[in-house]
Amino acid sequence: MEPGKITEANKIHSTLAHSYSSYFVLLILGVFLDLIFQVKIFHSSIMMPIGFALLIIATLIILWAQVSYEDLRGKDVTKQHFCKGPYCYTRNPTHLGLFLLILGFGFVLNAFFVILFTVLSLVFTKVVFLKKHDSVMEDKFGAPYREYKKSVKF
Image (cartoon, rainbow, N blue to C red; front, side):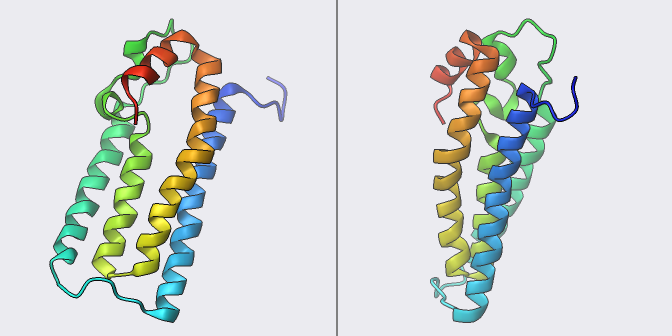
């Protein structure tokens, strides 16, 4: 492989890295704005345990996704190769886990801007990065990925 050559795997990982970075940047912006404006949205302490539950669930989803990931290089790929663990329920379980993790953090802190920017991050990454990710995966794996995409909508 030539130095600096962009491969399909690099495109996939680059797209995912940029989407994770957008969550991080918007989280930092949300924390910063919450420190300045201190807008509280919950007046009941019930949201704190819900936030902790989301933190635990999200961590488990992310770990499950990482353990279930299968390297498909050099394989004759079928639809079943994509459907492992949480990938049977969502095409992007790490994104789902990251969303729930930061949302739970916002609930624990009762931080309006963190919660707002978490929702904006989800929409932004879904529209921009995950659409590109799907396109690269379709280009790389063709019909098996399209079949998988039809069966796993989210």
